Image 1 (cartoon, rainbow, N blue to C red):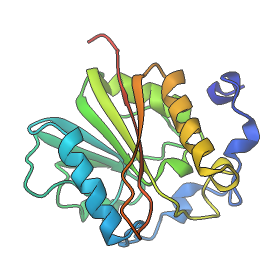
Image 2 (image 1 turned 30 degrees about the vertical axis):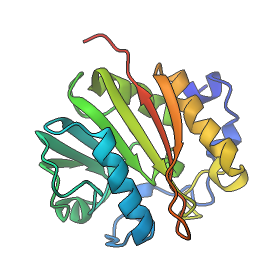
Image 3 (image 1 turned 180 degrees about the vertical axis):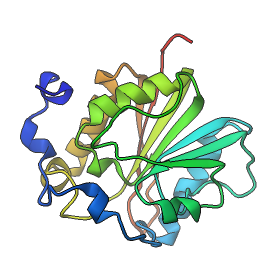
Image 4 (image 1 turned 90 degrees about the horizontal axis):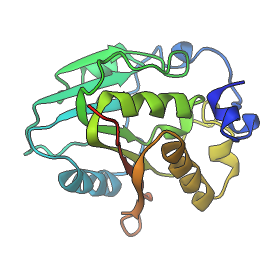
Length: 211
């Protein structure tokens, strides 16, 4: 039994129309954005609040763009994603690794490496989320925080059933449950959706892991 099933999440939530290896799906780079320009600006504005200047940041499930404020400087920005060309094309990353979280949810970083972890419009593709977030808690420093940004777009063949069948409020509750079950506290939901644009829903949580 997986950690997710043991936590009481129905196994069929994590079924996908295309169960072939994700590495095949992501073998070709996609230099596209998955939310519109107004929503990208809204996400960047939120990152100005969420990210401390000079911090160590992990962009999880990263791509060729991280939506970070151009004027902000960080000590380190690490990217972990599925396509090497996309990651290599991201100018904000200091380092990156190609890594399939659905095969290996353990993160390839030492404990207490980061102050913030970001997941932008990709949470719907995780099939082992509790294992992933347990590892996110480990790589965060004590009182480090995670931000999961969500919208309504997805690749329908690769998104898990839960994100295609549940109403918006239930999807948000599910992500909050992921964090709760993984030991995060101060879990909050924010709606930063711009008018007449793609929605932007944010779930954040704080790690209490001892350093």
